Length: 109
Image (cartoon, rainbow, N blue to C red; front, side, top):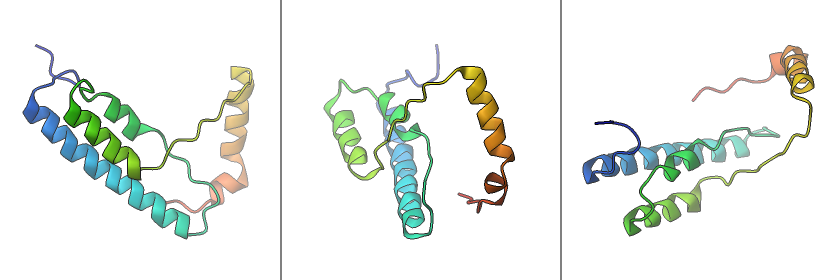
C-alpha cells in the first residue's frame, strides 16, 4: 500500500490540516514582516497552494479549510516569460553573478 499524499484517512488529513495551517501562518507572517521592511520585491513559490490541492476537495471540511487558508496567504502573481530556454539560462547565470545578487540582503526563515 502506498503511503503518500494520496492517503485520505481522517487522522492523516487532520495532521495535514495542522501542518498546512502552520505553514500558511508562517508564510503570511513572513510576507507581512518583509512588506514592512525595505524589500521592493518578494519572491516565493506557490508551495502552499500545491499542498492544498492534495487535500480531498470532495469533502466539505477540506474545501472550507482551503477557503480559510486562501483568505490570508498571499495570492500568487504569475509571470510568463517568453524566451528561448538557452537564453533564459544564460540570463539567469548572468543575474546570479551580478553584484546586486551577491550584495542583496539575505533572509533566513
